[in-house]
Image 1 (tube, rainbow, N blue to C red):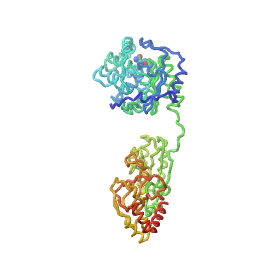
Image 2: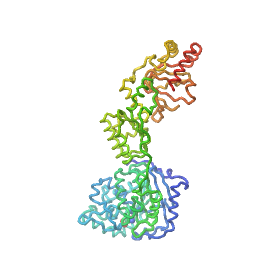
Image 3: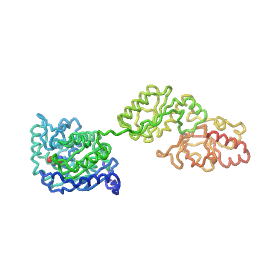
Image 4: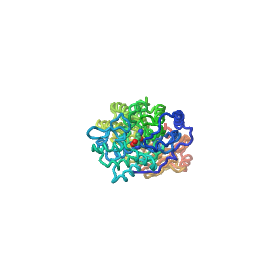
Length: 598
Ligand code: DON
């Protein structure tokens, strides 16, 4: 198990003015005067607890913790331990093996009911006592001492801190837990419990006597909601499928004989305990921990259950709640005729792109893409415009592509490939979401550049990366007469740069006519590392000028050779000499440059 440093305190939002803390406090205050219910007395030690205690806590997927009331008062987990020990058994043995020993059907009965399958003695589910006792016996360990230690370690990892055991509560239940003993003997008799009764109950009573606060329980629930990763410590506590399975069983069986009404009214996977604890989770969103010791007839905390219901209503958390309409998943469609990449290109290339740019189709997607949104994208991808041979998929605005949706889209990418359509992905997050795409680049503009390069190559209009234009073939020089070319040729010496070199870095470098290679343009002052923002690029046959009248007063970007580059460079001293000796040539040069930039 990977473990990190607990960050609970640091993550607690300061001040009570945030709306989440305010909601928790408001809900707590509105229920604090409800003193209905009774303390659990069948474990005598539990009857000594202050019945007025009432704490709520909510832990987010980023590890932030919101609290109200007695959220830092420890209580024994009791049945709140059950889902977490079930998680450990699932992680140890796998779902099928555990399922063969403990069912997952709601009992519709009290927590201590004798709900065993006739014949096999298999308990109905792991959330009632019979199933939980058997589940405890399944945890892999060489002996009962090691078994409890594993349970303590894993429950502590769920909470993000070491949990201690309450000796007095443990002893109290050990002395009075005859009903559980009877259940265990029945299972032992039926052959479903394969460990010794006393040793199993010793571990089970200890797990029930582990002490945690509502804040701890919120983090434990958040770990389940976060796919098994503790959001505070970042420790991987159980695999994601295990976390999902546990939440599913909590949803159907966590609240005993109230499970159906709970799912109907609250709609969150939850588990209660006789000490007054309650754990609930909203998958992918947060976990909540609640504590209030007065119980209803079913053994669920009166105030904790009511508070969960209010919270779920207030934030519309019901699992079956329709999330409402979202913004369109496709934000932009177009082709290389209407959308330009950030590459400055020579005329011959621009002409080809203008004539054939419709061969490159661009789609920008946004949002959290699940099945329904992916289906919309599929429909759109299926309609390839006639003649389209490249497709840019811009995933910059996609906050999340769910694995099932990613599989759907990747299958479409594969199918497009079989029709001869090449897909280039632009994704600044470099998530590798569509493995069958031809390429994934760090921005949609670069993906479009890549497709443009491919289109130009297919029309024989691209320069090989190592090929250099003759100076007279450069767009600027080609448009000047022979005399001007000769003057400029003498004033602008040839220069070469290696990959990664900064170009036009010195103040006295006024103009570059690029003859080979490519320059990347980065936000001024940024080093061209992975985090730098690439604004665009400059291709061979084009010019870059630092001449003030053309430089429109904005800060010039940093230019870096992305390939070995060569070109002709005009320095200020030469510019000044041209001004004195060949003012008409210089004027024509600037006119040309100005017209190139239009
Ligand atoms: O086994 C028992 O009876 C207790 N240690 C735990 C039961 C429990 O928390 C039921 N919850 N509502």
